[in-house]
Amino acid sequence: MTAFVARHVLNKVTSVLHFFVFLLMAVAILAPCALAVPVPIVLTGADRRPATSLNGEWASIVDPYFSGLFSFHHEEKKNGYFMNYKAKPGDPFPTEYDFSKAPKLKVPGDWNTQRDSLMFYEGPIWYEKDFTYDPKPHTKVFLHIGAANYHSWFWVNGQKVCEHEGGFTAFNCDVTEAIHAGGNFVVAAVDNTRHEDNVPTLETDWWNYGGLTREVSLIQVPETFIDQYDLHLSGKEAGSIEGWVHVIGGQPGEKVDVEIADLRGKATADIGADGRAAFHFNVQGLERWTPESPKLYKVAIHAGGDSINELMGFRTIETRGSEILLNGKPIFLRGISIHAEAPYRTGRAYSDKDAETLLGWAKELGCNYVRLAHYPHDETMLRAADRMGLLVWSENPVYWALQFDNPKVLAKAEQQLDEEINTSRNHAAIILWSMANETPNNTARTQFIETLAIRARSLDPTRLITAALLVRAKGDTKIVDDPLGKALDVIGINEYIGWYEGHPESADTTQWQIDYEKPVIVSEFGAGAKAGLHGGENERWTEEYQADVFRHQLPMLNKIAQLRGMSPWCLMDFRSPNRPLTGIQDEFNRKGLISDQGQKKAVFYVLQKAYKEKTIGKAD
Ligand code: GCU
Image 1 (cartoon, rainbow, N blue to C red):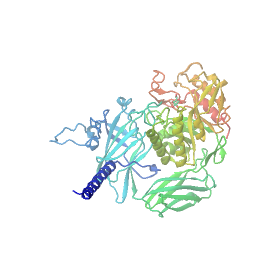
Image 2: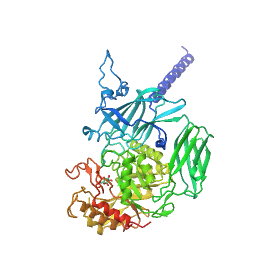
Image 3: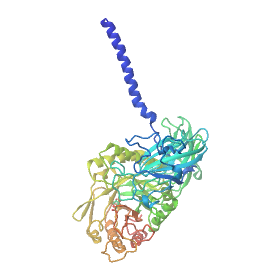
């Protein structure tokens, strides 16, 4: 063979080899995509849309080894419990599960408080529900989940429709291709196992309530639909409303309308190349939302065949030096911290009644503000805050010592922050996005949370960014110089003088050095007491001791020149596995001003008096 021919043949062979290498690479890259499960989306104002509720009883299977999903060599099964198979005579293999015979769990609701055997359970549990549906032509159908703690997987009619991580934010799975007319079934697997690289991480001071803890429903939208929007009062021009409406499936140039009938306000805007229609229009006679007068307006948003009827308040929030200005006027935030713990029944709160009981107690206390700790609370709580006139600190669950040097953990925190802000960005009540709580002061942590703060500002430039910081001590002086403060608009500080350190009267001689000329909110202070336990002021766990801590705290806090708010810890006793003291705690954190059974402790009236007489903080 001449050299020429040999070279020609070699070229041919090489190009064929290149083709096969390319083909293999393409398969390697595309194959997972082909099997990839669609990522769930955010639907702003999902609770304002007509929906088919899937709340109620679901069949359940407790599956600690997750054998319903994974084979023994940890590969996802093709015929796991999600197939909801019904054994037939003559089957070649036994079917060792049957949802139709399985015990029930109520949705919404954590599983821990529904069955004694599940109170401490951490692991996977399966849920299954049959439903009938009649999908309309030219529509899309989403499975809406208000929250599933912590990691969850969903199938409709045996077809995987989504997977989600994060226990406190709503998400929506596109089930259009999997659902059909007539009888359907949905299967969910929810795993509340804690992992070091989760957000939050292994250790929290609250109960790890697992399950479908908030509402589940089906939402049908036109093929072109509104997925996210943000409308707010312009901070620059009085009486002008600005924002945007994002449309999926819309074409640039198509129209979106926004109408506020009571203000005779109406505007139309074109969808841009980014899918967003930008709005900026004037209205007459707008009454600004305030805690004293929480005015809500009906806002109709139309895009193509889709529409949403919102209920929104309009106000401005900003800082000026160390002042917080609501609608341009200085305000002092008389608050209380609240966990999403259901009054009386305990467990994860989810209902309007839960929200109205908790926020009703906050109003009775004299609050104009609540810190909804330590994770995004649900839309029922935020709608109630809008209605009842309570300003809100909403918090991403970056709690204590996460793996701050792990990019995967940052991505999880960013995903949950995005879901929190994009779901709840239209609540007038929310004024503060909190990035974190009590994180250790080190470089990796500061960079991690600065990244979140920048992200939050880009998602929502209309609100204030904060975090609850730890303080350090030098003799009798408390020093607030955490470098993270530079990235915040409002400095939150947690301190427990009189409980975790010193005695109640230690507060009398404590000085404060705050290295920031920014508004300060004391986001936590307090002490534990068992309701009904009485004794001397020097006896821990008595109502008298707890009240005495507050009596010494309040005058001390008034010495802080930048003090613009407080949210003592906390409104109501809540479950925590960190609090086992028999006869006193019994797995409850007892720092509530009110017991989980609604008993107001003496301290409730100490704080109520200070708030009602405005002897704490600058009168606004
Ligand atoms: C911490 C933490 C709370 C916890 C509280 C307490 O500051 O932020 O989540 O419950 O202290 O110790 O009671």
